[in-house]
Amino acid sequence: MSETRELSDDAKAVLGSWFGMMNVDGDLHFAMQKVRPTDRAKAALDELVSAGWLGYSPAQGGGHTYILMRSASRWMRWLQARAKKGDQSVNFKLVEPLPTPPHGGEG
Image (cartoon, rainbow, N blue to C red; front, side, top):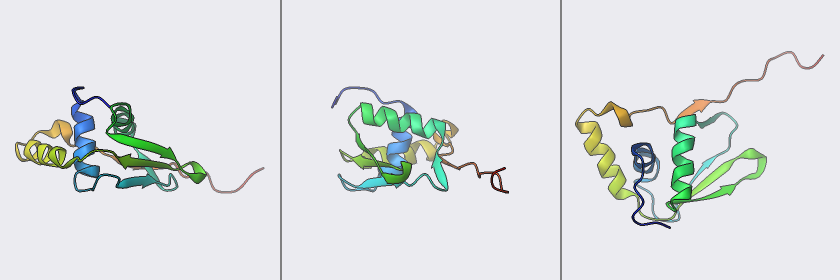
């Protein structure tokens, strides 16, 4: 786990928004049934796993669980300060609905 690696602003925003109020070992689970992380949020989650901020565990049924490995409260304060300044670069959609399968069955 690298203490000196610089995180992207997207990764900091994800830490602040989803994990900023969690205790270490808290987790975030995506069942992947109705919504999923956007591509941008997923890239940030992958970066956070690579950097050692989050653990990752696949779940049954194709879900994803991310476990907070270190306190992220400073990133919540960082995100709030950026938002207060009107910085729109850290204001992005985190989840999106999964595509709905076509109706009518097979055949």
